[in-house]
Image 1 (cartoon, rainbow, N blue to C red):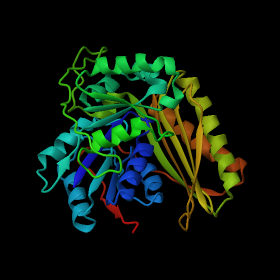
Image 2 (tube, rainbow, N blue to C red):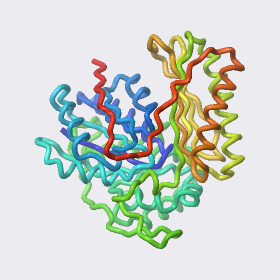
Image 3 (cartoon, helix red, strand yellow):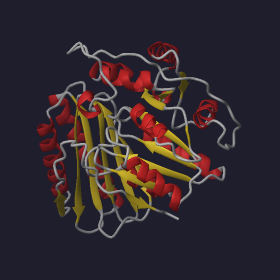
Image 4 (tube, rainbow, N blue to C red):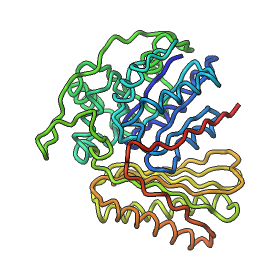
Length: 377
């Protein structure tokens, strides 16, 4: 069994990459399982991944980045016992230090298990903003990586790519730097698959990676102290986060779901920019309609809102879920913006709803929610 941790800041493309990897190895005859960690008590990416037919285990307390020794080992043990996957893909929250996760798994001494090189994705289209808004945290993620993927290169001018690649390589000279795009299946993607999974069977051959993560100290410019891997990564990120869920009274048409999602996200973007003019982070909205699910994303103040319609049946009770994680903003203000905007826009569409308000989670690392194993076979 091979375990691959795919980390990266919020909105760097981890979920899309995980889905592509899962499909890649499933098509090559491998059994694939996915472990997803979300911020807060409401998970989105786990829902999306499970809709693509991959087995999914979701830890939604936000504490996977800090407390793993019991819960992650239990999760991996259950997956191995009940599903016996060939490959386990782990997607940490974007404000985790993925190296902690990899280190803890290494120390678990799991039988017949190989931990693959640590992958960190970087959103090439907003690298400059990320280094401005969350420099210390992003640096910690970058220097810990063994494989650095500059993602979303289709959104970057070709003339900038060599400069971006050189800049990233300079930050972590020991890592293998790759270019990647979720919209392209090219030599970059195949090289990434081979490097990340080593000798795992693939449709495109094998390539062995020989590297170690950098052992570099990152200094917090505000305090003059090192940004340690062992500190609370959520606090270290400087990101305010809030996740919540609304239950909708009855199914809605896809075009109504799309219009509602667009209205909500447009209003959220405008209101967040008022308080944090150059924000980075990730706002994700997920609305279930009768026959599919509408997913929208926003990753920075100067980025466009993207929308995707996933063709799938929804549950008995359709839901709207939102995850917001934004730089340079007060969390209480973020909570009010999210709740008020969604309530207002649902009302404008005459959609009856109930707000399932989450329990406030203060990142007490001693309290991890129970694990739910979802089998889609």
